[in-house]
Image (cartoon, rainbow, N blue to C red):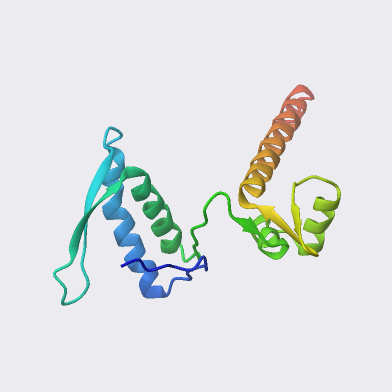
Length: 155
């Protein structure tokens, strides 16, 4: 039986946060063995004998990352890389206002497509933009440090 899960953010409770912390600590050793292709994990609920499944290590890494974020109290969601986002979703992901995002789209800083009167931005394009911006900031910071050292401003 297939149970479809929504692409909604899961916000952890205090109890979820503690369980996620303990679970991520238990999963960490499985990820230390770089040669492993898969992991066998047993899932049980109270009063249930549970079931043991084999997961690809890549799925264990995703689970581990989600648990680490939940352990910090952060909301998590899982999106396929080719997901299309609304302008509001993209703005929230980028931590900018929706009007700022619209301006970026109008300036062709991010590709998008129109669906009727609405704009859709690929999640992959948002991730690429964020990575490019991060790399650019790091480069500029390096240049500033080099200039500060050249001017002997470090004492």
